[in-house]
Image (cartoon, rainbow, N blue to C red; front, top):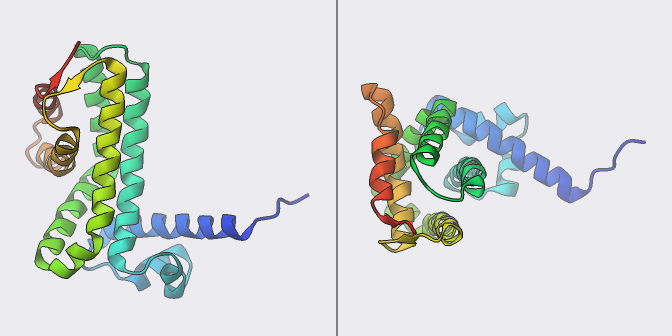
Length: 200
């Protein structure tokens, strides 16, 4: 017997397909050049379907960003959950996973993040409109840092929310700098991050 889909499940599936299409189109065209018509067409829906889930293109972009951040959280949670300490071996593993994420559309996402940052700087009214959503990302990452430091018995030498902001704003530069200059910046930046953490 075929499984019956509830309205909520159908909406969730549609939202997922729209986000997948948006990630693809943003990566191909950039934030400014991508249109909602492009995204709707790629997803196999009308533009009206987008507006049922996202009020603006900026909100759709932030939805794509949330999915990408969740991939980061999931990846690093797996490593940190298995670690009882943070030594050279654990940092090497984190660096390797970060490199792998960078290779999996990481460069495109980093470039998009910088483009979106520039867009927000040039459009203060949009920046104000999405400020709360951006703050949610900082808070989620900050809580992730707090939870994992507590579990390891470590402490941050700077406020965890400040560390979260530093991570969010330096990550695109690390990914793009590594790609552009063919110099691995993941290891050195991890060492810099670790200098702000006091281990037990």
